[in-house]
Image (cartoon, rainbow, N blue to C red; front, side):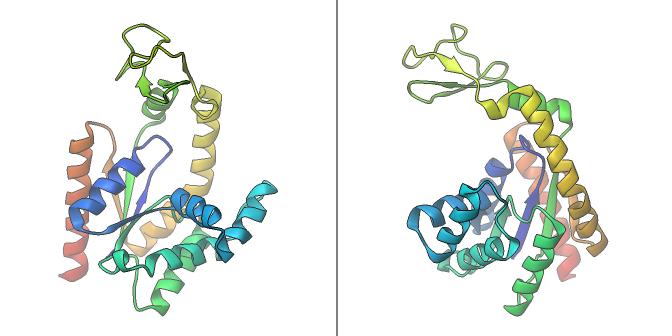
Length: 221
């Protein structure tokens, strides 16, 4: 089984993909990890990707898909995988489906975590990190005892540039521009299940499982 998990930045895709993969006995394949591992190991594909990344260019779809297929060929992916962060565009989705079809496989389900912009903004702009020990905090959900000071080591807390409001709003705009056509593509194929991504981690995880069970029932009825 191959499951695609979509959602905006701050939707909790990484957390939910890992939980879903563990519950189903599937591999969790995160696109960000693929790049980091391939570049660090200096694989042939990693070297190609690194060149584009160092020039600030988008890595071509054929390299990204090749990396993904290389990852899906590992033994832990034999039962299937939950894809986190891929595909991002219709072109990548089409390339993925063609490559999977060549192996007698397919995308079995696409789960879309729906999270309103204001919730994403609250989740991301509230994050703080200790500059010394890297302990994570959140100004609403997990604040430090003393504002701006790490409970663990007393180091100063800071906000990552990626978590500043203007940056988050830009990331949401890019997400919509990239993903709206992708969502329409999967909806036309009848693969898409939309899931409310607001609530406790466990609650959202159960919603994803129910949506996947419904999709599996439709496929295998």
